[in-house]
Image 1: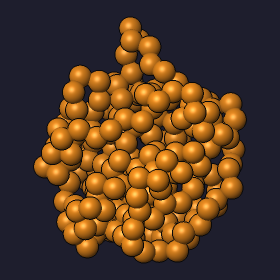
Image 2: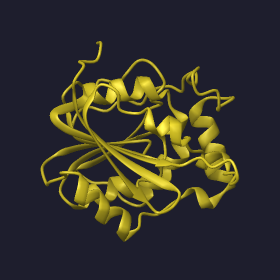
Image 3: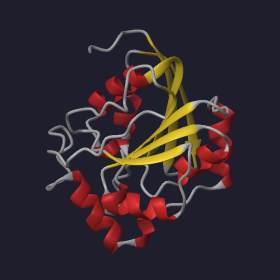
Length: 214
């Protein structure tokens, strides 16, 4: 497992405009106020994931925006080495209480912050997870960074809430519009979409047709 670095909280992304304070502080407040934020995995969600993603024992996975670590623990129990990162110290504390291990490590990191920690080296991960987090990130930057961190055959798995004008969401469950979702994946060789219930879509990206700038 790569060395981990706890990164200081940093300025939110200028392209999202949704977080008036540091990402870590804002998410801490949401975790403190509303227990609904802790969304467990379902058998359907995990089953569909394994149908679309090659996640085998011995592989390395990054859980980007891991929250309380549901996916992190699930992947670790199947034999993957998992680096689970989140901006919220509160979420990470909750995750650690539910277990870690030799192949599961938690670290604080705001993916819109600089510098990128040394644990996120190019070509490190076979799988990158990003569950319900992409609407809060600088999407372009994260996708470019994720492509760099993946191995040549690696896969990026995105779970994205679908934003619906007639169904307001709490601040910790914001989504992307259908148009924003359609725009994701430029420069990737392969994109596979599948629905996760009526309110979420999952996208699996792999291969880069355009090499990201370093």
